[in-house]
Length: 155
Image (tube, rainbow, N blue to C red):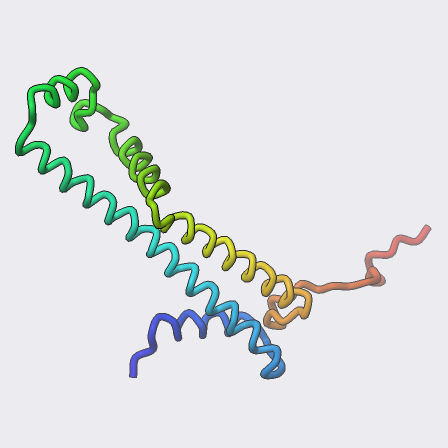
């Protein structure tokens, strides 16, 4: 049976840590879960922008089919024509962002808070794992409280 992406991600993260017990393994598994959710949050954000971009394309297509003379003049003089405006992709992205940010369901805002919460949790777990010094032995930072004999300078 093929390993799922989640299982592969979990295996990669747990492989980085040298958990000595089931209790020590739990934070590592939690970290893998949080990082997986962060990837999904990024995919959701991308999806929101793609949906909004599709709405804009449909709106423009409908307006192109039945342009009024006022719309044509407005477009010509305001410079909204993407073919003549080099900054059109950046401006369009900014407009998509503003429309998403102003949605009545606050989808982008909620997703942003969700992502920030996950990052805080990930930071706390990484800090705890570093405090426990549970990286693989060859990757551990040596924490010495006293200098080695070679580091001591004698006069």
